[in-house]
Length: 115
Image (cartoon, rainbow, N blue to C red; front, side, top):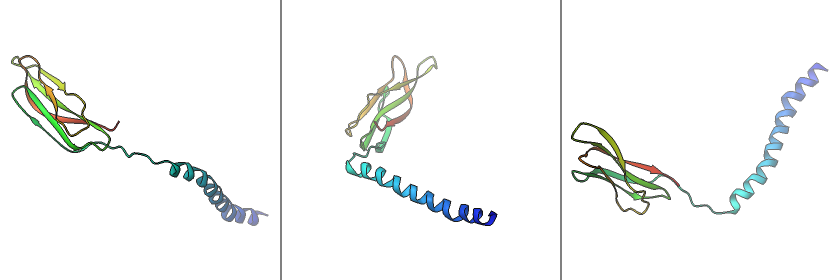
């Protein structure tokens, strides 16, 4: 009896698991392939730089369904550091981040999102 039980566990249990996995995959695959979906990802081909004495610029050549915006790290005449962000864009046009007051950009960057 012990030998038969071990054979059953070794041979039949994995086969039964494969059978169940096959049955459940039919239903899951049908609904996923019935509709077409737009693939969305982070923007690509991005560049960023300090544009002028008061702003930074970021631009991505491909939005891929996502958005991007410029980021500026600003330092004022008293040495205080602040961050500034530009408007979200998704159409290959530049986004600008402006430093306020006497702030001057010390670093530039780009932030991306895919929704």
